Length: 324
Image 1: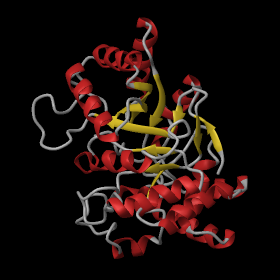
Image 2: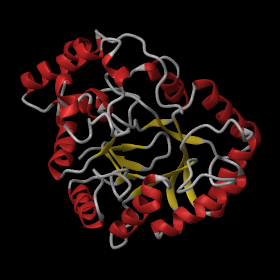
Image 3: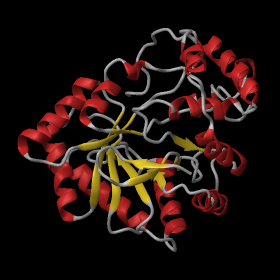
Image 4: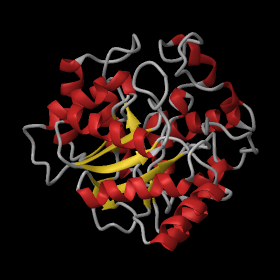
């Protein structure tokens, strides 16, 4: 495993982050606690020290499972990230959003489920149009000053929103965002227009979610619906827009080059992300030890500049996906 710093924090994280959305019972493809424990244990053995969950993943089960799995391990080495914005169970007044009340009560519940006094990275899961950014950033700053949180992160927003949050923090002497969890992969590159250059300028670490396009970049496009994950009835299936804007040709080129390199399509797609200087750690969610091991092996794949250009060439602009 290779390691890098999370933005300009100095905190070292593995180049692969284990996404924990598949831990729980909310969906039929999710893993129970014993199965999740096996994935987490193997991740640690492989050198992964960066774990991403959220309060809303499987109604809090994901946080509980991750917390218990890491309880006996050296917390000094592990970097645990969680998120707040979406409701944990039923929606209702003050159960979601980024008001002071919502953040404080959801953070307290997350720490309890994780069994931790401090979470390393707290991320706002989406932008909240109903709450002034000053209230959100001051509440997050208070959480850091109390010792509940070490660092702050954002996720899936427009560049002007990220810039507004950073400027609010600067002007008021508050803690600012050090990480951005955004939607970014070979078949969806709209983040390259404004958000990623802003992150680079601000020294913000980038930890892309859905780095394999919910499976779109892991198998030939004509086979996508042949799996449980690709079933159109599964709301986590690959979004149809990935096949537009040159997406099918990108998928075919991933197939071609993966065969040339002797690796899987998923490994080649992750390798492309890992070659991008603004990417810190792609967030890889998996229900398979084999796929986890493949993801770690992708760190060692060295793509040529010509092959990177070949993979990127068919891309065409897409509508924004993932900010909702």
